[in-house]
Image (cartoon, rainbow, N blue to C red):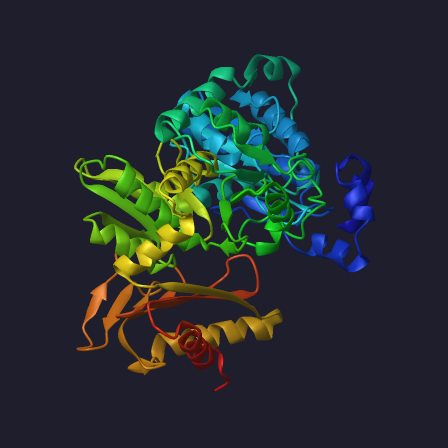
Length: 547
């Protein structure tokens, strides 16, 4: 196999990446195969069926083309791409293959954000959408995410169907790929400008006027697609008091100034915080490279820095919507089953229904799709810094959230308050829920067994109390059963199956789930207890102690 691939190296688009890799890493590309799942495919550049290159992308594109042609009489698709290495090249290649199979393609003329892709699919009423991005993964990664006609990522059933179309194709090197110049010219269309303009208008209508205040904002796009769209929206909203971190607001597929271009990581804010200190700014905002996630840091009047977790940001946005907007009839907040308790308790305190779904915004989009006529979407979020305040997009959308946060901070500034003050008000109202997340790495086959053993331990051997907290119930999303500890009654969980376990206490919950892509076990805690650090450590020690 390797010999055949080496013959195609120069035409693979990835020769320079391959040459820079270690022999061991090179070999892995020939021993594995990229798998298409609910998030599409994501991987590293290189040669072989297990890496991203011209030939694996061609196979993917042809599989998608065959799927769309079988499902639609006149299929159409929107294709966007971010600033990563080979994103534009992959977009062009996929566009030409789809067009050659007589599929109408709207191709962005330059890089775009992920939420814009979701919006474009809905606005143009296309059959599907493709976003070429690897979000905040390291620089040598890229990926292809596929969206359905509602602008949401594909659900499990559809993903499985598309994967079958791809898997039915032969060896990527043996595929006969047709590039038909006539059909390419006929079917590839530049994305219309009105998509961008309408998206901007939707967001400005959502946000409304931002009040004049002394708020000063520093924004960083972490080398991604957030510029120009974030500054454009702020200009449309007549908010001028912001500065860009110029060194990080330049497109750079190597993400040179950060260890990780991820607003979940505190050190991603270092450069922006330094600029805020130099300019006496009080709100620092960062978006990830494809602008579906965002985070912020606040600098108070004494120069103290306050970091906010994903669940805390979600709770603050719920507080803003409850206090400063007119709530719709029967409002509903949607959050994942591992998102912290704080926002949920706040919403419920104000009569807002909270619906919990599995991890991943595709499940949130499905919940929106299944709303009853008497239910109204208010807000959706996950603890991993993904938020949605209006469902004209069906994926997490930092583009609409950034101006909302600025508006809320401006309102608070005029009241002599900060976002940190508002968070403390939530604690006073519903309790001081704290969150903790750790990802434990377990390498190799032995590691896989260790993860399985830990999951089995929590499934079958949870005591009545842990760290002095009474266990109310154990929810097993693999068996879809909730076992109530008090009377041993069993309830059915009405969600899709997933390898997740939640242990419920009066004070909150803990949850465990293996990562779907890495040799990790993710452990979540969300509790309202006086001595959180001590309790969290005791629970951690109990879960991970050697038997």
